[in-house]
Image (cartoon, rainbow, N blue to C red; front, side, top):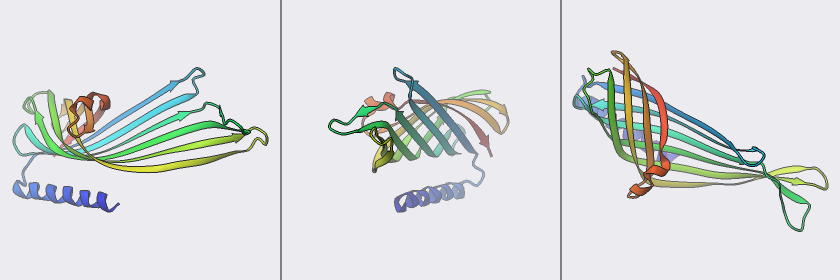
Length: 210
């Protein structure tokens, strides 16, 4: 928690510094969301649920160039309901649920490829991200001789790593201060650009300008 608090403080100080330089700077507040659910397996009893939400603040230091600060939360839950017998006992594993929670703090540059006068406006952004991951697995056991069930949770395992975020954004301006948008975004381990495609997500969202 202390590490997350320090990140918040650093970002807050950076925002205040930028606003103090130019009190008239254009700011863009954005919210994005992605949800995906897959059901798989021979009996279609297993499922993978992936949910991401992102909030960002872009402070335009030039007409088409902004400093971007963002926070995203991604939760991936994999549930497998397959009976697996434990050799030499009356127990079986009836369910395994793995939960991976990622909290990502990023700071970087956002570049609009067209001026704000255009109704459709493509943008790219890239920067540094700090990822905080918690990974835990819950096992459900069933005793076939008594019919009783009980659970056991392994973890969470906590990991912190340096990452890079990159995004392509297409905005559609509906009003002077309001836009809807779609984006393709990735957050991958630093210096491992070949893995960028493994983390791609497609998101939809809203933007307000003030």
